Structure formats: C-alpha cells, structure tokens
Length: 221
Image 1 (cartoon, rainbow, N blue to C red):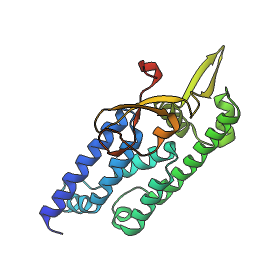
Image 2: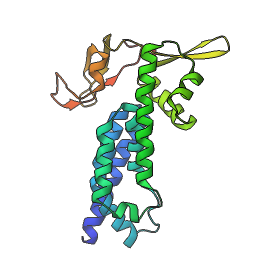
Image 3: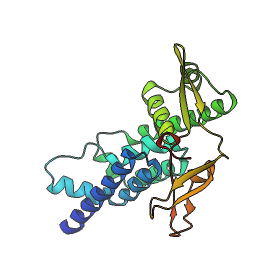
C-alpha cells in the first residue's frame, strides 16, 4: 500500500468516525453504529499510515469501541458478528493495539444478553426497582447506566420516582403509533414504534434508513 493510499484510508476513517460521533451525540445510535462499521474498511490503512508516518502509536480504535458500546444496547447481534469477522481477517488490529479486542467483544455480547433479559423482565414486571433488576440480569454499573440512558434517549424506557425509590418501566407499547423522522430527507412519518426500530424504506426519498424517534418530552407523538 502506497503512502497516498494509506493517507486516503486515514482520511476516510476520520470522516466516518466523525459522523459516528455526531450521530451518537444526537442520540441516533443505529446511525452511529452504521457509520462506525463503515469506517472499519479503512482501519488497516489507517493503522499502517499511523505507524509509518504518524506521531503517535495506535493504542485503541475508537470506531470499534463505539460499535462494542452501542450495538448491545440495540440488540444488534449482527454488528457484533461483523466485528468478530473483522478481527479474524485483520490481525494487524490486535497486533497494533493495546486493547484485547476479543475480550471486549465477549464483554459486549454479555451486555447484549443482559439487555435482552432486562427487556423481558420489564415486559413482564412493569414498574420494577432498578437495583433488583440489575442484580438479576448480572450487569455492572457502568454498562447498566449506559443501557438505561440509551433506552431513555430512544424513548423506550422511563424512570419514575416514587418516594425514595426509582422504578423502571417501558415507556410505551411497541404497537403504539409513534412519530419519527427520516435522517435522509427529514420526512416525518407515523407508525407503530416497533417498526421504527429497524431499517425501513422512507416513503418520500426511498432511502432505506432507521428513522429517528421523536420523543414525547420534546413535544412529539
């Protein structure tokens, strides 16, 4: 790979990572994961450029960190599988990073399983106590906090204070009509909330996207 090719990979990686960061900041977690995964095609070239011409060694890879942090909160098994394939195909990632990526991937899978357990418990036991649930599903405080905050941002979960305690409950029924916006053209559509949690075709621009939920507290729905 020539220097110009490596430099191009680095530039593409940084651009896609910037998009992923922006989407995450806006609470558009699926879009963040999608951009981070696209950047993975440029990791190898980025690492090579950084090693030969950069001023600092690669110690971690933020796009992988982002996927492993957010995919479990979205029940996104497929993205974790893609990371697994990437690590097997691009050994340079493990060799040139101080992170044990296979261990991080295993931890992410554990969080995803815990997220599934949490969803199941909240479906069966509305208004549950957080501490009771956290102990049941076996998740540490760091990942618990990330999970709760993400689901609140997505409008899936609510925390209600009752006296000295805080209880968790699913914010709405998944078949309840909800408004969401196409991230490509800005069109606002209305459908069952469950439909907006996966890729759909926008009726206006025909792009296959994950619509952004318009949350009730912002005056929507």
